[in-house]
Amino acid sequence: MRITLEDVEYRYQANTPFEHLALQDVNLEIKPGSYTAFIGHTGSGKSTLLQHLNALLKPTKGRVIIGDRIIESGRKEKHLRPVRQKVGIVFQFPEHQLFEETVEKDICFGPMNFGVQEEEAKKRAREAVKQVGLPDGILEKSPFDLSGGQMRRVAIAGVLAMEPDVLVLDEPTAGLDPRGRMEIMDMFYDLHKRRGISTILVTHSMEDAAKYADEIVVMHKGSVFKKGNPEEIFSEPEQLIELGLDVPDTVRFQLKLQKELGIRFDHPCLNIDELAAQIDKAMKRGNR
Image (cartoon, rainbow, N blue to C red; front, side):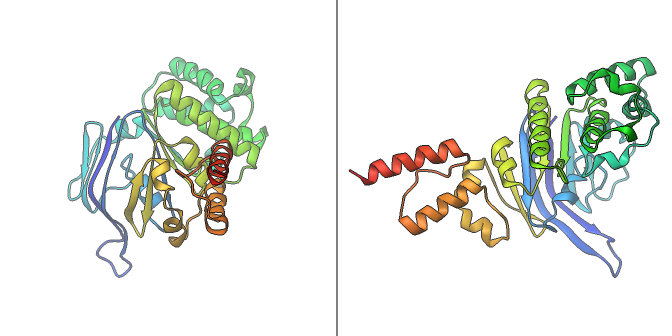
């Protein structure tokens, strides 16, 4: 499913003394089957933009095109349930939204709320727990008897059971240890590849943005500051650092070598193996 934002502006509490401009002049196209990461400082507009992607928020100016639906300012929108079914959002700490007495009932709640019959919903629940790496037997357990990591996977399974075409991830690894973070991110990437789901990641982790995304969008003060593939975005690390953002550790180390030793690199290195190869190449070049 293609999502397009055209001249999107959003103001919280518009036409009141508390009005706050959160987004302005946002123009973006998110292609079907792509993996897009949004990065930016706190308050840059990432989370506000995210809520426009399935019409939780409606622009105060401009329009958002979600598949064949057009959501635009100044117009009342009806029958948004199909949009919200096709664009699933995993918010921070999704496990806080669990409430049913069994895992199966919790996962089935969303599909059944959208009109899916109980038998089909249960089938989806069985498939969803497998997709998130949990055993079938967990379906009969209370979600509140599970570990924190398992609870998060159950909450994610509930979103997957809706069978979305687009999966929006808002800091999905918040609060997890490094191993748990890697497992969850690898799981999402595997789903992205196997099912062809368009994936949209909002993150503060530059490593995750560099590792998984096809395209990165840098948000700053409610606008799109820059967009491109990971190599393009991290080719000017000083620019990102000036915005108060981090860069991948390999890029930071590469930048230090350039400044202190005068080593010239051909392109930004986004992983350890690439960095090692570039250092070896630069050293050999320097010895000639």
